[in-house]
Length: 375
Image 1 (cartoon, rainbow, N blue to C red):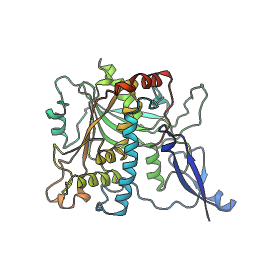
Image 2: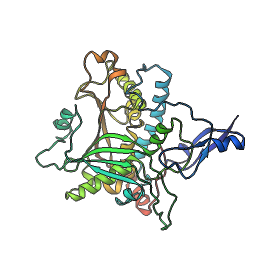
Image 3: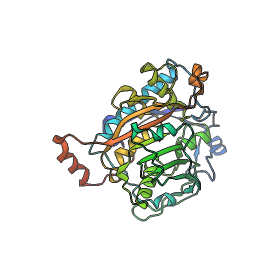
Image 4: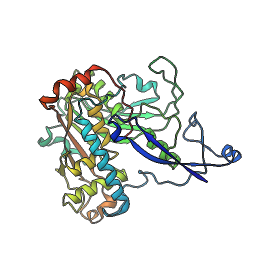
């Protein structure tokens, strides 16, 4: 038997208007049944055991490259509407001088929370990205003569029990097998994200069902991990984190993201899939641009710019490009099944309206607030 419980979240930094109301269905079983079927997750299992019925098979966004569905399919329409809503919130957040800032400001905290770092001995750019990295239209990102590249993978493989702000040892966090792999180009001002799975998504993919509770490592947002690594590396080569100009996402394989990308292209009259470089450009304020910002592969960029201003200053997304140099002409006939498009978020300085400068900056610098939202 299932019982519907209505809950309301009021923790969003976007205010009450962004609060969510949803129904949670809880399995009600006998005590014997509940004791016999504990929900075990990954590795050692989470310290907070939650009992439930036998897990059902649930497809992961990484089970296949793309869904192969048309833009009129119900699932695609649902993904599109959800991405538009989240993209609008994030677009407004980037333009909000009073946006709450991330409290993860220490590079050393990554290892304390169980993140292991692996540095590639020979950094390599993803295939099909050479043209995008070297063209003049985006500022000659690939400056090989002076650049100092570093390819780093952060993997959440260690159990940790970090201390909180009051120097108390928190609950232990089990490894989730989440990982973020990216190439950092500090002198060119670019981050090339090659592979990323957040702790929450990693748990869901392993357990084949929606995550319903338990203790997941709090330091897990891509916007925090990549931002801290980039800022740390830039300072090591005597650079400034505020020079960030581009964020690349190579070969996107997330089904939800690709559903939105293909829908955005069709709305822009591109009916044969992502074009080759220079691709198709969308302004973030347009409907398609907001949809891209609201995808799983776009949220991290917007959150990083909105909540990491101590490192990057006032920045916003100027344009988003979609392209695919790897797909063949024959595969374009069924591009929904074969395309793994790449994204480029071009970043620019943001100058706030003069009329709101003084009051908004006073609110922003008057006190440090903690960013806890989960978009």
